[in-house]
Image 1: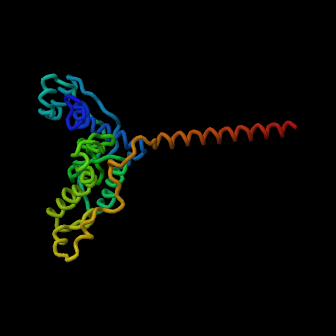
Image 2 (image 1 turned 180 degrees about the vertical axis):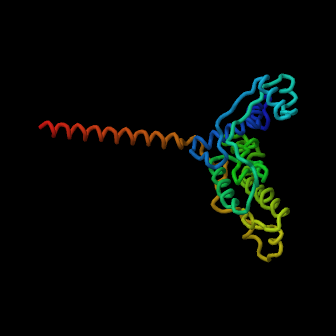
Image 3 (image 1 turned 45 degrees about the vertical axis):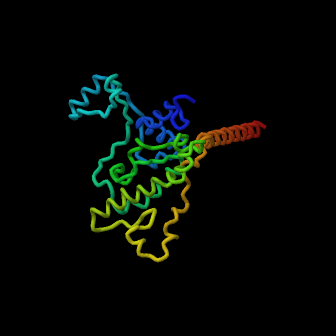
Length: 251
């Protein structure tokens, strides 16, 4: 089709790459699946009007809002995700790492590839940034006719975990005397000294690629409906038993 990029509609590419929509799609999936505990909580979004933008700029000394050139010309309103406030303090402590790794795997299992995984995107061990996330359905996580998708899909599936090792674990170890030894892949510095390295180079076990997530299958909504049906049945049974007791009392 004319105007397509690698067989994908340009509007879809722009939409899937917009940081605001990346956040919305990722948080939407967490909420849909009842796993909002996997990241800092989101309360929704706000769109700032010009007067509100000016007041915030004056109060907090903000001179640049990271608008694109097109957005600057159009003076597009600022869109913002409202999240739980966390008093930052220390962004990372070794004791937090096992849970951070477990949460990252769980996020990927829900069809979310975080992509920008680094220490600065965590506060007190909790992920706070989905601005570059790819959430299924996403044109970069879809098996299709485009060769680049087929070749990169399997590699991209493990992107978050190698990034975690590099930009969270290795970054910490470079700055601290007490090292963090938890990681998804073996430390390459020591791995090269081993004679039998191949088995250590295998990808982490127990990990399901984000692209394999079946987004069409109902999750939380189905469970909620089952819960409601169960409540209705229980209420109906209680009402029937109450009627029976009243009838027996009358007799």
